[in-house]
Length: 237
Length: 367
Figure 1: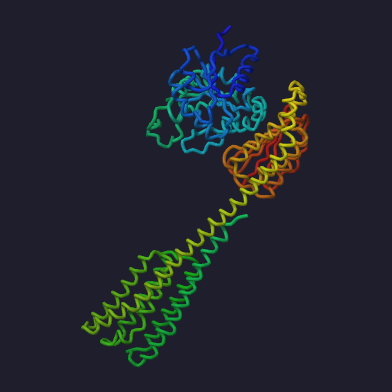
Figure 2 (figure 1 turned 60 degrees about the vertical axis):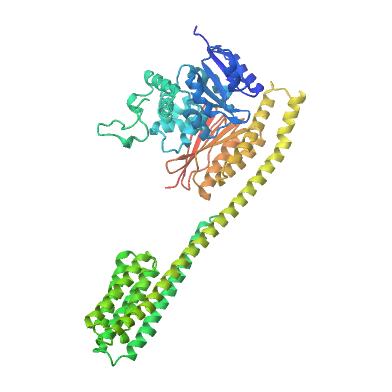
């Protein structure tokens, strides 16, 4: 039996903390163990250090967005899963760009939060529908180039189909659907600001065969040099 | 309703009015001013016939130039061709005039200048300046060739100041009016936009108020029953009621940050009906959505109504931008296959049944 993943919840509403704790408790495999709860980040830092694998972070604490605090948490070695009532694609993108492993909206919590925490602990990509939505809505010039298949899988997943249904729709296996969606997520981890969590996610994706190092090319691939390698920014950063 | 067109038309209409005014000015000058002077001095020219030929030549240039400018801003090639013809005719007419009297009997300089104003009016101001300078220089050249004296020079400067000055003044005036018309059009446009924004805000406010009132009747009782303990959260029926009310609350919150596209509004209206039946409806969009024409919207909302009517307890509607259009999808627990209305109006409809869940997508393509 594997050791359970340890989590801390940072959430300013006790009722939400309680709800998340109940989801964790009701996991049949008892794969996650709640070790700390804090109402904000200062409270967390004041606590005696505990071995926390993943932080479940409410993005809005006391009325303020704390997306900018994520890089600090990531640098301190935590893996962050954002859990938020917001579903604005811009906020989702900023959160992921700052190094959060996954974004779970409060609507998606019951079905996805525990799984997202487990995926984060293993540095594996986890894409909720709100993340898929943000990727589809992304219009920034710096966005990574997704293949048509990756886009289609993201679109059907966002639309609300199960991954098995997406597979039937695209005439591919459920596993390939996961592969496409994970690859899209990994491509995002390769863009924007650097963060150890993104590096870990990418390394794991390469190890798992989700993505090949050669596929991790920033969007501005027109800036290639003659030998076909990107001229700026090492791939797989 | 679109408001861009009338304002764009307005600025265009002003420009056209100025252009027509200049056409009349130039034609009038050539006919009355230059023509009058030509007839008055007919005995003074070495060859009256040649002068008349040049006059006709310029009249043709005016006709050609008028057609050009009335069709829109002419390109540099046709504009300068007409201008150079006028310059050549004017110089030839001046050269063929008797030496020593050239300025006194010259009818062509003024006309040539006005032709330049006509064809170069809507082009860069510098082009007209260069043309008028070249024209003056050519006339001065003929004067020097004939043997320049002091009186000639004074006369030349006087005519230059009078005629070129008038031409520059007219051109500058039209340019200024052009700019003013542009400003007026922009102001009208922003006023229209502001009015439209205010109207939209009012529609949103009214719709939100109506929903708030509806929530008073539907969500508040559920919460009250839960608080009083008369409704049991363990009861499936109560959970569905809660889910429906939660979906409506979510939508109420979401709508504040979304620009209301007509398609969104119509889908919301269709969802309202299903919600009254106890179906929890979720609506989400990904990215900025294109405008969909009314006929295509009708096909999409017809599909929405068919699916939402068949949904048992939950439905999810998503709108996403795809290559050259929009993909509106529906996932609902209809249980059985739903007969969807016919596709058409540029909308393609696909569906797939997976157990009790229906997935359908209406894709509208602008191409």
